[in-house]
Length: 123
Image (cartoon, rainbow, N blue to C red; front, side, top):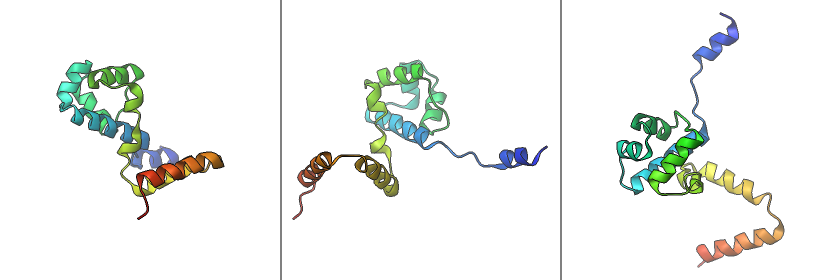
């Protein structure tokens, strides 16, 4: 066995952050509907064990499966892909906000500032 193969075999598999966010999002939407994994699987015609794997970020659904899950949850695909609500780490939130803000022109930044002042007035 070559040295690189040995290192690869002994490396711990790191889950893809986007897969984790997708899984959290589906779990959140499922819980909001009051469904178990088994009920969602039945309604989406997807094995409930696969639903669990998706929710844990271990598996990625195909587009076809994602559409079935969205229909069963009675949401549009963009709603399933709205990950911002699932980000738990404040540093990750800050990084995403900064990446959005750094590319905005001055007039859009002014709009963001006005919106923040409306949402969070300084007292």
